[in-house]
Length: 444
Image (cartoon, rainbow, N blue to C red; front, top):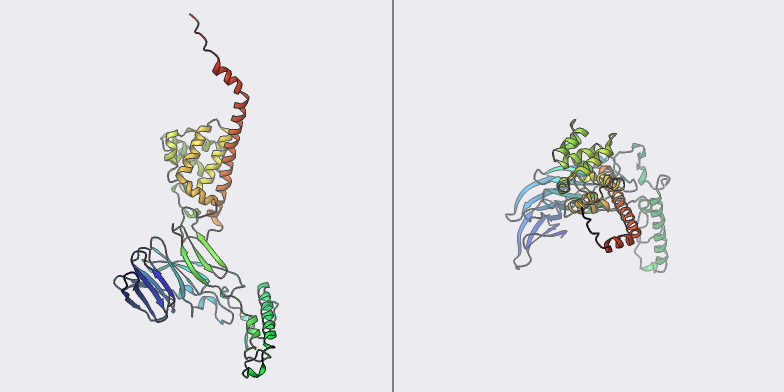
């Protein structure tokens, strides 16, 4: 048995095994095995869709079978072997794009809505499939490190001799090995020496002929040259979607890798069009469309009068319209808006209005602000539109939110200190004014 998965909606347990079948079990009512889903090859992993109405099973031949667990009916097949092609190991005489034999998926995961299927295994790539169309949407490469086997695509014919690949020949030069391989060779040598010391205390009479750890040759101890050339192979052992559907992670040879949505991939209608002008923004503000006016003002912040336009929009928006202006606000503009608020706190007379803008932004988008400020999952974008959350417009937008929040906090703290100092110097005057008797109205 290679894999187990509970149904999220029923009392069924699915098991995949090397007997080329997926079996469904009723583990709560004691009915035992209920159905058998036959396959042509060994089953390596199984996964239930979140609604419990579909099972995905990956087999040794690189295919993924989609089953209806209620009717034991095959709903479709995903041909994944060619999708896993790529990355040659030492000894391969073909380029990485032509190496697909022996590769299969060993980890499957559905997205929260069941629309996407994540698959990883003995390959440097993790594939994202559209479940309804049984089609590949995106391949994510896990590593490009040449210290790992299975990451190189190009066949280097200069390192292939009549006796075989140069990297596998005994006595080959170690000048091309990296530091990791040299350390691995030193560790193997130390282990061999330790085994030799322990073997010296054993009786030679009890040992079988040819079973010793001594000498040369290609017996039990003659594979040192091959062991010296051995390097870890890139693999994906487990994949999982985030419950929010905003990202996913994979457990690989190099560690845990987390991929998230790119906020820079979100499309906003105000990004394009010749009608995005300062006059159009002011017209929208006069017509009462504060949200559109603010979006255009922030998009035009590279213009000559960008500060004046944003400041005018912030200060002329009615207090009761601030909440509506921030509804469905793009996450990519959080940092520019916070920067503009911080500047108006220091330079403008509308402190109360700026506090209202800040409060309504935190109420409407507090979770997104917290995630962006702490490097978490970003909002917007397309999950299959880019590789990872490192780099790109999404990473830069998320990285700018925390400094902007600090500037807003510093601006309000400075304003509070100024008001406190003014109040402290005038406290006695205020007490006197409050305690003074009312002045009688003079007769006319």
